[in-house]
Image (cartoon, rainbow, N blue to C red; front, side):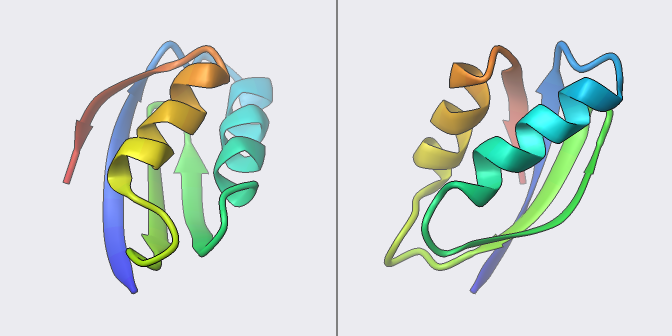
Length: 69
């Protein structure tokens, strides 16, 4: 499992946190550690999900990914 912290733009409230959490949990092989306004920390199986797919899920939910480390 790989750990990744994403910096996310456009999040302003608890509804945003819930949306990003659900978007990430919907991906196969992803465990969401923590989502707060402006960031998310996840563990993921690189054989099932890529960082690009994590970014895409967040962007499809209406937010931007500023960085991933």
